Length: 124
Image 1 (tube, rainbow, N blue to C red):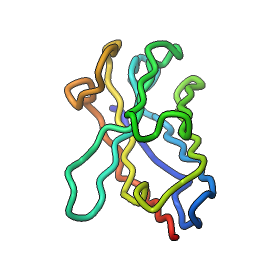
Image 2: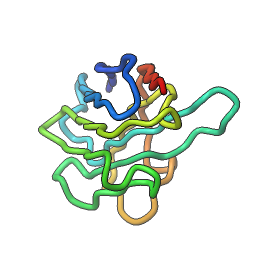
Image 3: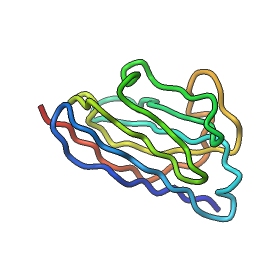
């Protein structure tokens, strides 16, 4: 009913930028109300990165990316602009979405649908 497809991953040097996108499709894509990003590096637990409601309200960033990453929403497309990347940002990045408005701390409880992931690699 809802499919999420990520794109924009790749390899960059430290200090560089990448722009990730997540496009939702399917019969119920238009009623999604919360979309965001998680990441997971080898040997580490999955980490919440950023999220927004689909109306652009209640934006959240994990402390480690504040001032460097920007999340935005345009209809069924979510964009994560990543600037000043560091090797610690290297991970598989997953788009996630849910039907309910999300606010406050970011939690995987807010997300029902998940994308397949896109790899981000930052070299020093």
